[in-house]
Amino acid sequence: MIHCFFNVRTFSYMISLSILMAFSGCGPDGGSAGDDSYDVHSYAKPAEALVTHIDLDLSVNFDKKELAGTAALSISNKSGTNKLHLDTRDLTIEKVTLDEAGTETAFTLGEAAPYLGQEMIVDILPETRKVTIHYRSAPQAEALQWLSPSQTAGGQHPFLFTQSQAILARTWVPCQDSPGIRITYTATIRTDPSLMAVMSAENGTVKTEDGIYTFKMTQPIPSYLLALAVGDIEYRALGPRSGVYAEPSVIAKAAFEFGDTERMMDAAEALYGPYRWDKYDIIVLPPSFPFGGMENPRLTFATPTILAGDRSLVSLVAHELAHSWSGNLVTNATWNDFWLNEGFTVYFEYRIMEALYGAEYANMLAQLGFQDCQAAIKSMGADSPDTHLFLNLKGRNPDDGMTSIAYDKGSLFLRMLEQEFGREKFDDFLKTYFNEFAFKTMTSRGFLEYMNNHLLNSDPALRQRLQIDEWIYGPGLPSNSPKPTTEEFRKVETQVSAWSDGKSAADLQIDQWTTHHWLHFLRSLPNEISSERMADLDQTFGFTRSGNSEIQFAWFMHTIANKYQPADQALHDFLTGVGRRKFIKPLFEQLIKTEDGRKRAESVYKEARPGYHPVTYQTIDEILDWKTD
Image (cartoon, rainbow, N blue to C red; front, side):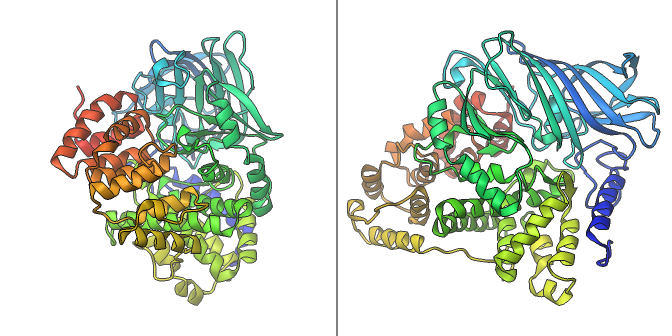
């Protein structure tokens, strides 16, 4: 326990020391009982030998679906140990050498464990400073998706992208794969000259003649932010500090959609201090990308499903940009503390959107998020420990914790604090927090201690009144949870009531409705709707063929439930053409509620599965109890 009279510098030191000490356990089944900074998802022992830098030299082989080459790990061996403990999964290790002399050394691989892969133990000397691993990735490496030309927008060239979060970096780089460990890195990537490679690092903006690209990331990052994409892409600047990469047929649309990026950067800096990553670029990936976005520093990965043509879904960009402070700059020490990344980021995202588009716009986003949180709690159960902010994910895939709870309950917690202390005071607190712990890790307990000292003034009565422990360590939403509301949505609800009472869709008052109005409209419709009334909505508003993925998804949930056949082909096209797990998972869950729906789900999944990223198809495999050959 860190006493409240410690000053900030002492507290920072103690947090760093406690994290380092926590990693001295013997692997995912070891560690100190009750130590909330011990990472149960990593075999690393950085208190003994810590990886501080990685030099990658990899060749991209689309025919073999393989990355092959070397990872040279710079280590700090302060304990004088003769063993280096690393995380690997499905890697073929050819040999390991030490330091510049290249002396070959022995290594062992432990037994493979679900999710975790294999512990790699390398024999080193107390004076060893560099360990070079010669290796190859497997075609089934979960971080990597190898796309054929037909799965890309251009249809002429293959595409590769990575997804390292949460613990998938170990499937393409042998490393200490824990969010509590930071590294810098350089990389040389060799690929076909017709393709371009980009990474979460300093990037070029044009293709090279020889297909060789070099990268440098000088700011220390956790391994889950290691990222690579290779494909037929080009670059377009959005401003002096930002730009977008995309396939040639997509680049113009993407550049328009992200036109407010520089304004978002300015708004973010005005709130919580300088952007510390130099450039902020975005790459639009093929539609199989399993998430809306991934906050890889200097290069956000984004789904094409946000390219709505009217900038109506760019809150995702604000979200990934906000991660440049919450997550990338101050990082959850383990995946049990995932809310420290995502709850802060959602709160920050809303503040950016308010600065650009006004309070009502941001409140609509917040109310939709509140609805998502309520739905998640209902689905999990009001007393489920998975509705806590601080989680216990031992023995589980950390992806299990990546739910609306971390995002939306976390954001509501911060919104509650803002309402209690006032925006000015709370903003000063957050700005100081991001600055004080920049490029460091944080636990839930550490944040609460810092908040107790610097916001609550060590007042136990205030802590109890604000139900702080209930928020972090308790289920559901405490009674003091904010309940975001907006007049705009009340207008929507009036129109829903009118339509439900028999009014024609064509007679509804929908002037100047945004995507958020339409989402609330669709979410507020009755569960049971006749085919005639479904057709009234569809023929008037064109939901089935909407170019907006969020609207289509919300509509398809109704078409499945109400067996609205005119949408069947569009639903099939959506499920086979989009791999974003946020959409795909609920749609399959909705389909299997009926016997006929399950048959449809299994039929379309057989066609769709080869185009999904492993992150997505593993989720759907479980839902359908799918057996692979």
